[in-house]
Image 1 (cartoon, rainbow, N blue to C red):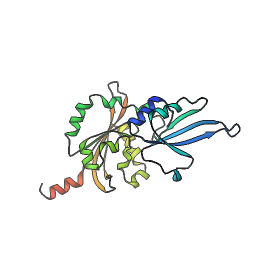
Image 2: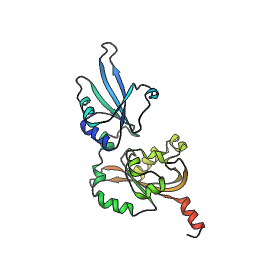
Image 3: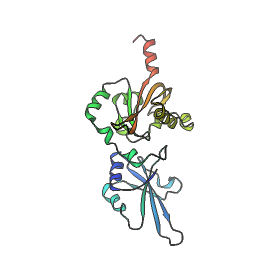
Length: 228
């Protein structure tokens, strides 16, 4: 997904705790004028001598200086963001207002489910809420994981096979996706878990995102064996 940079979008990036942007500059070879600048948001500080191909440098995101480039004359500034579906818009990814409704009430409900990881994502699978059970099961604190894509919980093999995208599409087309597979914790360890993944719709039946409910089946089995 490639979308023009605006002050609102910049604020959304800051709110989702992106700290840096990779910078790619497109130049008109005949006039040597800058045609456009593409920014790719990242959370970890890049290594200047080891940037991805095509990127010349990176900037730290701060609201005031970055707002200046939103209106550079004769130069288009874009934010480029990975999405699994070309129809997903920047509003789908960056606008979390739907998930903030009655936030305090839902937080209390979710945190009461201590043995279950309950995660909500936007339409692209990017995490926007996280209960205490998710921290217990997967090892990430909420502030570490907000804005990251839920594919981080998939094994390398499943990511290579496109399983994260398959799960999103299956949940949307069938109303739910049930899986039992290996999941990956923050420390890289794996556990066998069961999960229910289903789409979220607003009051007008517009698709707004997904919810994932997960439980560590291995720990449950061990508890049964110990008679707990």
